[in-house]
Length: 386
Image (spheres, rainbow, N blue to C red):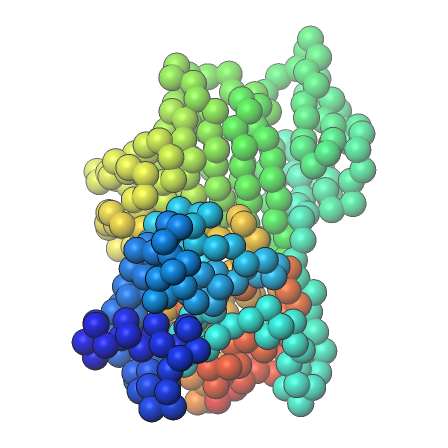
């Protein structure tokens, strides 16, 4: 389809002016699953082109209400937010392409339970929580920890207060290494000894010292973590993951290093980082991403949708033409589910759009079912059906 024709059809649709023939033409285009990049380009271009006051009087005024329907129900006119394309792509809630189906996703859709013939029970979303493993092997469950003293460790008092671990060092205190771990269905935040803030996604961990006493600051992670590193030019900050290393002086970045994902992704939001694997390295600028594949090859991606990459930290699922199995891996981590695929399950389906992570499992599955995918949930086992 020509770009001009697609722009016209979307404009007609969003302003409720499309004829039956025009709606059918648009539906056929989306059902075909072709030119997904063209569709994303056109929607994004419309959002960018009409983000000022004149947008209200433009032919695409309906886009502000229909595209930017925020998950909590608020509608924010486009002119109030300077959406560049990477943010816009992650925010497309209503113009969602779910497995090639053009679907207008409203708040009421994800609030509806899935039919009882499909889902016989339900699963609550994940929540904040982690396990702190001290250097001597003692473990503290932070889900249930109240404010106050936790333990004495190597001359320091370990205290939990307002969601943070504090180390009140005594005269004899020495630096030791602790580990913070999140299970499936848990996320957590912590502040390191230098003030660096870390957000851990579900099924992740970080090993960190109680004090940075050497020439640099080093931690190691598994799973996914977002860092806001305190600047200290005299002590570079290093993150180690699977024999790959990220070096930084002070910056904001995200590392996705789940073992069941095909690549390790380091995404830079602010500052600069150097990603090194063996003899190869990549220096990132904001909006860029380094990908390490299973053959230990580093690849630089220069135009990254950071809103998509950071959706988990903002308590959202964000899908951008994402394949079914990748979607299911995300749901498995957050809802603590075991995923199975029945014969004939449509693994080729792809999804775009965002959903709140505080929704019940059935609410998320209800939206996914709009694309023709079906599910059976039995306890913690979720089976994808034909």
